[in-house]
Image 1 (cartoon, rainbow over the protein chains, first blue to last red):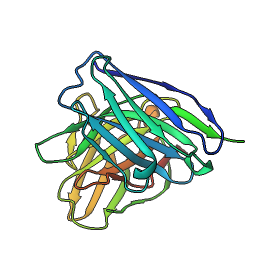
Image 2 (cartoon, rainbow over the protein chains, first blue to last red):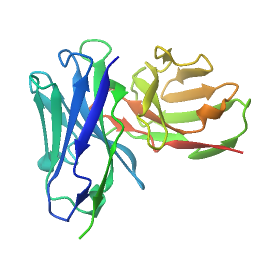
Image 3 (cartoon, rainbow over the protein chains, first blue to last red):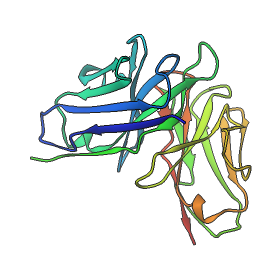
Image 4 (cartoon, chains in turn yellow, red):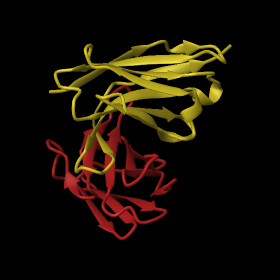
Length: 122
Length: 107
């Protein structure tokens, strides 16, 4: 059974960089998309982006200029960096495994991490 | 971006009730819609994908359907563990988008 275990700093000051990592336990990183999704109080769930085992990245245009998503297949970990955070970036951040049911389609998220609450405060 | 409009945004029900949550897409997304359950402090879980296919291990009291750009999640015979927030998500196009969420509370 695949588990995702995530970690990273939960308290940031405005303009700092958010950095989170998610470890994949009990499964392969090959053949899946590894994504980040956040849930903020006023906006519900927002897809941030995803990376595959080869390092190919898709990200939300609304965040693209500030987002870096990367993967270390040898450690079975993938990471999110979000630059220049503001109060609008306060949210619970989830990592998730994306499965493409059929070739050419985008992902459904069948395994999720427990979430990391990120607070932005001076 | 494809907008998903969920209704209602909140819902009160009792154990044993049947509840219906709707999700309307702003344009055709074929059958590429999934439903998730979120509970505070727990990892979210996938309930349904392809509009109506139940994820392995999900109880059969959960069901989904599609009519054009209108999608429905039905929970029959509500159980105590079903009180949670439910989101729809489209995976027809980037960026992936979610509905606003429906909070299901105990009456």
